[in-house]
Every structure is written in C-alpha cells, then in structure tokens.
Amino acid sequence: MIHKLAPIAVLAVLLSGCGINKIMPDPVSVHYAPGDNMPELMKVRRTGDFAIYYDKEKTPEIPVRVHAGEKIGFVRGGDGAIKAVAGEFRMNVSTDVASAHWKRLNYADD
Image (tube, rainbow, N blue to C red):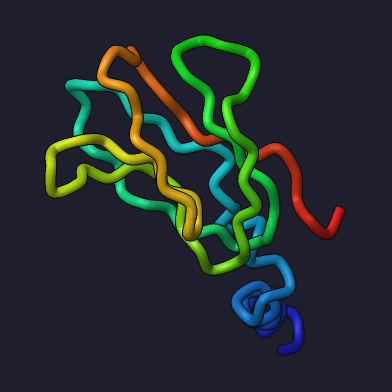
C-alpha cells in the first residue's frame, strides 16, 4: 500500500515548494525584436540582477536589481515607444535596435 502512495507524496512535496523552482524556473532572459509579438512580462521568483543587452552585444547596458515577485520584459507605452521594464526600472528602447533582451546576471542569495 505504501508504494502506491509514494508518487502522491512526491507530488505533494514538489507542489508545496520544495522543488517548485525546478518545475517553474525563473526567467533567464526575455527577448524583444521589432515585428515580433510583444512578449508578456515575466515574474521573477528569486531576487537577482538582470541587465539589458542590445542586438548581439556581449556587454550589458544597465544592470538592475529585480526583487522576487517583480516583473521583467518589454511593454509598448501610450506613445507607441517600446520600454524595457525591470521591477520599477523603465527605459526607452531605441527605435534603431534590431533586438533587445533582459538576461539574468546572478541571484542575490548566491
């Protein structure tokens, strides 16, 4: 009888939070390119630093601390401009950028 309950016990542990990051990982990056559909803002599960990268550059523009529960991504403003969003941080994305993406640099608790 116990061996029949084992899968239920494992599922209960996973759903209770002891492995939820393995099932639903933190966003590592969020990508935007003109002509693509606007990606949804992604909620950050663990506090850490993200930076925005333009096109295929290897050097980030601005690192930003994003706290657990805040969101990262891109939105279209009322004026039509694309804005990079990371928690409370907002920045216009230049119209001549071929692509941009937020990338996680680290976790604050590591």
